[in-house]
Image (cartoon, rainbow, N blue to C red; front, side):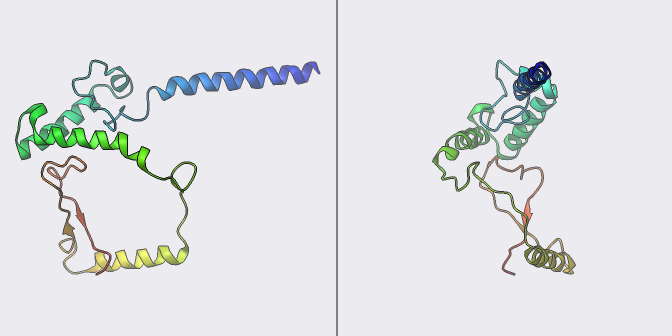
Length: 164
């Protein structure tokens, strides 16, 4: 019984240590640490989590991202269309998940495609790439003016329709 008690104490100590480590690590990773998902961290008084994990690089990257949008579409700082659209993006990231119905416990399910489906996709994509005018055959994606979902002002995003 002493040996069993010692083992139990060791397991409990290891679990407590893991819990404490996980809790501390969770503060350094996740939403709004590497890139704003819920809250804008430019001009925030507390950038400690971002700076602790990534240094000032993440703040500079995001500032450059927003500056690029403003440079392309005009405006000034918080009054620019880019800033208004970014505020909407962040607001929707907070609000929309609450309004969605989850069909699984965690909201999604990862599954492997069947061999047949994977083969169909590979054949389709190989056909697209084999076209004489690829990548010119790809269509530019149309984004609303100053939309901040994708950095389309620095690099155009393109797609290929599935029905051709």
